[in-house]
Length: 228
Picture 1: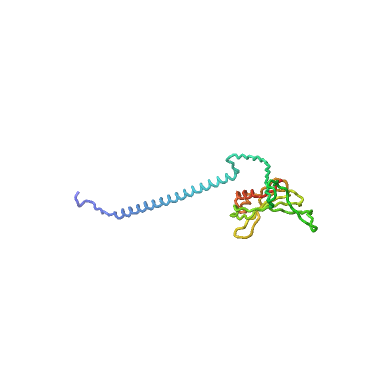
Picture 2: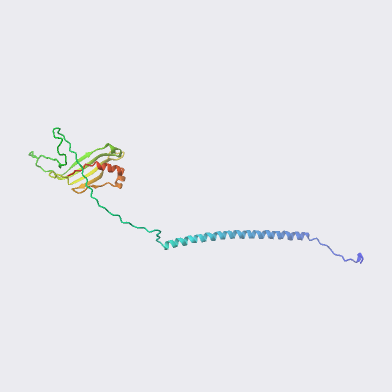
């Protein structure tokens, strides 16, 4: 076949179209990756929220179970009733007798003989009876001045001068208030009639008085009690 008889055709350039198709494909891939990334972010958020809600629900259920099943006893508690032992304590205090007359014999009996009270009436008689009076025995100690204690006083109450033993005894201290000239009375102990001694000391009293309990016990020893 000669060249004159060859068919004729036209060649078109589609490179630009191919280029555009390639760019569109890249954009679609990038957009798809962005969608997947956003979906993964939502998935992580929802998963964390679900874990938090499950944990919170577990705590609420556990607390509800604890309230329903109370009381809880983890160990057996054995209550032992203390044995009370009563012991009578008899306190004997010797009262010194001060002699004003040097001619009196030194070997005389110095035990307590009761009050020596004599009152003369208008006629000069000493047979009058004194009723309802108190004899005070006071003493001071330098060991307790730092706590404001000025005086330790014991009172002996008598119904009449015919009594040889006080019907009631009580001991107290006079404490000087801090930065003041006012003194307060703090009761230490008492004896009613022939009954046993009753101490009034306690930890609460020591706290209110501002004096250590051990110091109050030392002061208590200095009370002057009458003895039979």
